[in-house]
Length: 149
Image (cartoon, rainbow, N blue to C red):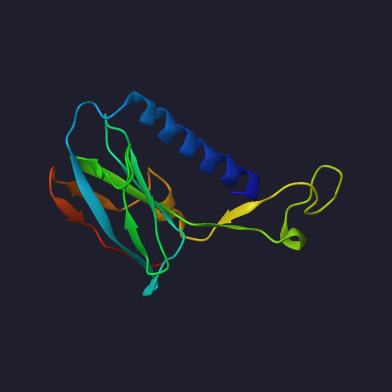
């Protein structure tokens, strides 16, 4: 898959999640959710963690320097809808101008910003991720994720 296809896929996934979020939480109770994400045994900083359930608004959080995240559905730190979730974790970085794709005129890295995913695709794609979590309502749910290649 070329870079533009990967970018389109990433933004299509994000758009789908946003669309689902507009549907709302469906009246489900929330449970506070937090945890630590590691990649190759080290804390993963700046990663987006998303919990996605059928018929419920997705919850999202970002990992800090220690890999710790806390999920938000509507209000900061309110958690995720109770029930089964598929979990996707993504971390992108900005591609340096000299490594960017060339545009139609053969210019490289001029006038736009390009990003690339730094984690294996199996964690970043809704249909491929092996990561699952069951959120219990009204309690603190702790979900650590240890990512490998």
